[in-house]
Image 1 (tube, helix red, strand yellow):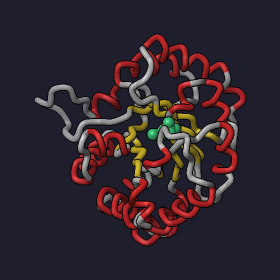
Image 2 (spheres, protein in one colour; image 1 turned 30 degrees about the vertical axis):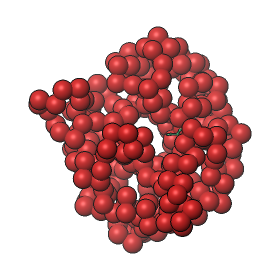
Image 3 (spheres, protein in one colour; image 1 turned 60 degrees about the vertical axis):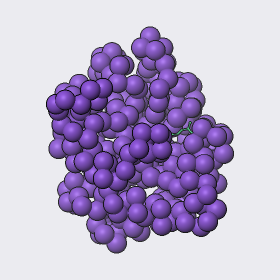
Length: 251
Ligand code: PGA
């Protein structure tokens, strides 16, 4: 049985105080969440220490939103994977489309980030997804296949077992436009076949593939009912405890 995961990507939102209040709101509703669902929160770097303190005795896991492509040294403004694991982070989001688009992240950078994260025992939540023009040109399968092949195929089976994949069509992120359950299921199944072809059927069965892009309480149930959708990577709706929990109870 693969893990069901609902992960909140806070992006560049909330002050520390607001973030702490959000965590308290989530913790207050935790009894509504089935034990089979792993909740993950990914606040900004500045919030990781106080958020970790609040999460200490809870079942909610801590994630960073990014890490550097170097282990340490003269890289002003960067945060390295060993710093994150030392704080108690269990996950790190890598390859988010906003990082690819606005900060020039390439497959080459992402290979280094994935390797450094795994070396530190962090589980990468590796994001893939096509842009609108790529879907309109019917290139979405090729784009997603390349994002997976270029960044994950060098991993050993043991390393790959630590990876979570998030399919996030760029045209659905923050736009209010969700992929239909059929569109999402189709590409999630394709991702699983791509994994099976390279890593084998067992690895493909075990990997959690999350959907992201305008996921909210009103559409989560339909998405999560799809056989190859194992949860969600949530942006906007993760900033309200009620909505985040509303998604987590949608399995
Ligand atoms: P959204 O963002 O839920 O606000 O569309 C999802 C994401 O980018 O992870």
